[in-house]
Image (cartoon, rainbow, N blue to C red; front, side):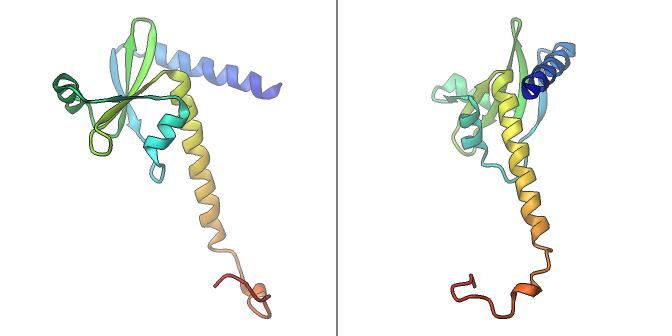
Length: 136
C-alpha cells in the first residue's frame, strides 16, 4: 500500500513539473549510458514510428538525435526520442512510458554500479584451495 502512495506522489510531482513548462517543445535529456535504449523504450511502452516517408525523414532530422524531447499535444504530454542512426525511427510515449523508462534505466545503472563496487572486493580468502570448476 505504501508503494501506491509513493507512486501517486511521484506522478503528481511529475505532472506538476510538466505543467509548469510554458514551451510546447523542450529537450529533456539524453538516455543514460550503458542502457540499450531501443529495447528499453519499447519495453517501457514507447511506440516505434518509422521515418519511412520523405516528410518524416525531414522531420526527424530537425530533432536532436538520441535525446528526449517533451511536447505538448493539446492537454497531453508526449515524449519523443529520435533515433536516426540505429533504426531511423522515432519513439513516442506519454508520461507513463517515460516514467517507466527512467525507472528501468535508473535501476540498471544502480545494478551496474553495485557490480563495479564488487570489483574492489577482497577475493584473497577464496584464492587458496578453491574447488574444481571455479571460474577462470
